[in-house]
Length: 318
Ligand SMILES: Nc1nc2c(ncn2[C@@H]2O[C@H](COP(=O)(O)OP(=O)(O)OP(=O)(O)O)[C@@H](O)[C@H]2O)c(=O)[nH]1
Ligand SMILES: [Mg+2]
Image 1 (tube, rainbow, N blue to C red):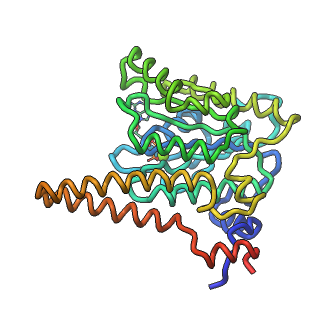
Image 2: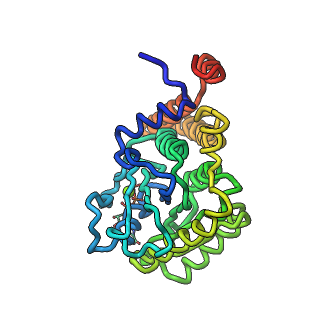
Image 3: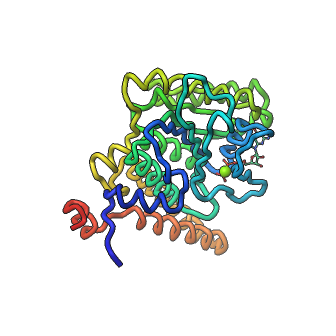
């Protein structure tokens, strides 16, 4: 099998292109908005709402109605004035909204989700497509910020990097599942605690009320920022700079390092739990904890860089 250098984005981009028709005709005037967030937060629902029921877009993203995750591959949706009449008149490119598989997926490890998203973003950047903005979705109906939700936020933050925060929209969803007063309190808590750094970097917090109006308003805001920026300079995510310009390999990126740290923390907690279960003679839960430990160890292995791979990357894959 021939070795494909990790940072050879011309060739890697071609591979992504083969499986993704959007790249066949990539243009420097293409504007990308990526929608990210944990599984089930409502990313695909958001995209369907902004398209509207009359939309001429053929491949609308599927919405999950079971407990398991739904979107497993990145799905770019191409919008032109015909398929999305809401595009501002001055906007003369194509808008590409990318639905992404959520972290915390039922079937795939977070490391694999991160890899798919990173590869797509790097390929689009190396094809000169422009980034309009990033949307990160979070369920306001969640009573507590779980450890995984916190870790996902950190990975997202590292993927974007501090210089692109003013084009990040932190969007809360499922407002109909929560008392508005309660939701407002959680919103403040998110801003003051978990999203503090992103908001200090000028990320914007918005509510999506599961309708066309609030969804389209967020897209319009991003497009306004994008058009104001066209003359001032391009938006580049930290992961794009790391992979394409600095030629790092994915495990060496800040996003992957953040994921590694959270997995190491989870491993420590599971090992302690397994120890307690063993002491208490709780065989069933001990086995569950062991399974979790093995799963985390597998993910950590996927994020490890072997010395030969590191050397090959340094040598440009020679
Ligand atoms: N009550 C309520 N349910 C919602 C809302 N948005 C999405 N849902 C439901 O939440 C579930 C998951 O929605 P999806 O849009 O598939 O979520 P996703 O983020 O795309 O999930 P993955 O593809 O698995 O990453 C579906 O049953 C939706 O109908 C909302 O605002 N309110
Ligand atoms: Mg989805």
